[in-house]
Amino acid sequence: MALVPFPSSAPAPREPDDDPLHDADERELDGAGGKMSFLEHLDELRNRLIASVWALVVGCIVSFLFVGRTQEWILRPLWQLMPEGNKLMFTAPTEGFMTMMKIGALGGLFIALPFIIFQLWLFIAPGLYSNEKRFAVPFVLLGTFFFLTGAAFSHYVAFPYTWKFFLGFETEYLEFRPKLSDVFSLWVKMLLAFGVIFQMPTIVFFLSRMGMVTAGFLIKHTKYAVLIIFILGAVLSPGTDVVSQAMMAGPMLVLYAVSIGIAWLFAKQKVDE
Image 1 (tube, one colour):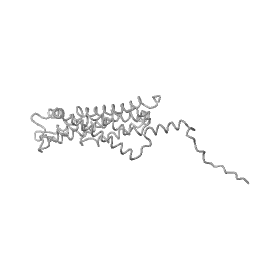
Image 2 (cartoon, helix red, strand yellow; image 1 turned 120 degrees about the vertical axis):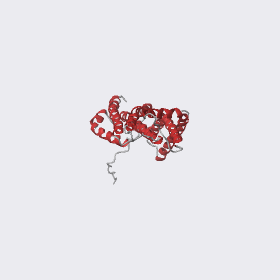
Image 3 (spheres, one colour; image 1 turned 30 degrees about the vertical axis):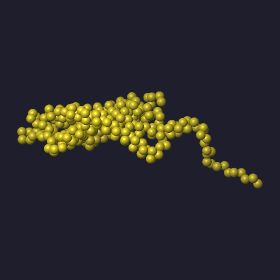
Image 4 (cartoon, one colour; image 1 turned 135 degrees about the horizontal axis):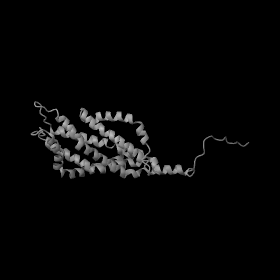
């Protein structure tokens, strides 16, 4: 007697051409680097770090050619705000030299910044779809622009007001004699902090283009964003005074409003992909 095979409930194996749309998505993901192994990711990270270090070295060489002018551009406005006869002072023999070296290194970082941001994008890009990779140029331009804008805001607005606040504690029996290394350290902390927080529109632009956030989502969660912003203002502020914390939180509130506008303008659903 012939045996009749019992029908299996498992679906028949799908041929590669059964679902061409699904196959196209898989090919697109594979082409975007979805099959990179962990070691390949580490090797990619190493290559990007090496390229960034070389860019930083070149930037430092260029920066040290103008380090004297850069130092004067940073410190002269602070000295002019001090009472007449007072100067910034250094007490250690190497303090003046090391401050100049730090200024040269910081200038090199700013010169190499666009290239470093581009290397960061190249490291992220293998995990993206091909239609998302075209955001490389906006990412680099916006990242550089907003970082430099934050640094300029810190140098021309935030730090002078913070400096005046500290000078206000000088009396007829208290003389303010700031140490060079302490002043420069405070200036750098505020500069980098504002450069980082001014990246908020860049991040929102990238997330909105990927469809991860919308203007409605940001508006709906505004009250939580305000709370988080003031907490970050207290944490990121280099000083414990209210002035420096308000200087840190105020621009973040404005940037959050700008980010809502960016999310509305560049939302994914507004573009015919």
